[in-house]
Length: 116
Image 1 (spheres, rainbow, N blue to C red):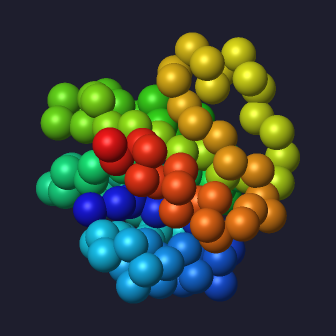
Image 2: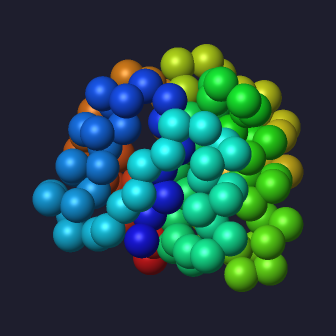
């Protein structure tokens, strides 16, 4: 299962459709970091795809919170954003980054690589 946190609903619906219909993975979509964190208390996603500019926190802050949960401490993260997040913070946390707008084939290749 892939956890997507994207506050732009249209983009979230498109990404979930690609993940489910074209890649054959299950996906859940949340629009805030708080919703995603609460959902992850009982779920164990294999990948996080997080928008950097969420309404209640940054994607990096959410990554840090999710990784405090023991069952999620090794889940890889893909950060997506129009804005370039601080490279140092991405490297320190081993977070992959894909700038928006992105090609859907590139998204699929990145997801496949992170799930391998």
